[in-house]
Length: 445
Ligand code: PEP
Ligand code: CO
Image (cartoon, rainbow, N blue to C red; front, top):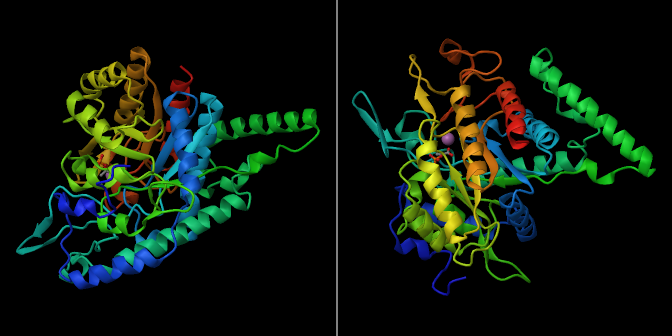
């Protein structure tokens, strides 16, 4: 780690997406408070994840990252959390089965509370207020009281992250993820879906294979009742991230202990900005979102800044170009990385480059555009001799209507029925599961 880096050295740089708190003293108090509280994750989990991500970059494992665009405080409920875990577990099972690789499961979860916005302010009629920035910062209601950034939200977000993670860990430790009992992951409302039928057939076949292996071996396959599950969020709010950035006994370096795998957003990846400065010094594996404005030169500079030692597993590029642009933008980037021999994990986010506005004003994404971008991502990497090692989705285990298309053929007129996202549209349960089957086929070649 560079000797000129400290958890607060970002403060001397320009902060993009800066949040202006009217009460600076209260912000300081919240941050000091957070700095005293126990970490949410541990350095050995973080290092385990990093070595798994290094395997994904080599094509030996595959990353499945997904969850809400923005978590919110009222969805910190047992049913909502269990639903998210269930859909990620189901998708991962499909990917293992079809893609024949171990899956690294990472939720956009237990801390995905801060959002970048295209404008700092929102105007309605005569009134202008700060934009909604996620529950880490303020609330959605269009009143001065709700929109004013409140430093207490930092503590509330930390506490809800801890509660979410505690419940996820409890479910997993209790055998919720046991391969022999996938009925735990059933979601009542999908009993009649075609996708559920295909899924159940697959589960039956896995069950038969497990019984067969256990019979042959004469003992139970103990490790089947446990899975690793990691957390991630956009590391947007640097005061929050800094507050839990620590050194740990018996290891060198500094760890961000609010999450295993933070990422830098497309809007904050500026080379001379505060986010790059903060991220370069932490030991966690990190992601960087890259959109259509990226060039091979900037990409290599990002690598120089963020992974000068070329450590495997350290750096993931999450590309989100849109189905129409990926074929133009991705190949020169892959070529530059291959030519320079840099270790990066490539991950496709087929959501953020495919957002459109429906006739009723809703933000939406089409299942076909999402799938097209993904298929193109697999094909480009394969053709160029590199590896697409992961996928990144906005999804939910609930029965929402936010993205169009999929086996049930949702149209724009269905969007009003169950549009629950505060920010970006998510794949619903069925669309996510269908996507997993389709990706599995692409992984298999
Ligand atoms: C997001 O992941 O919700 C997001 C804002 O993405 P991006 O930074 O790629 O726009
Ligand atoms: Co989003």
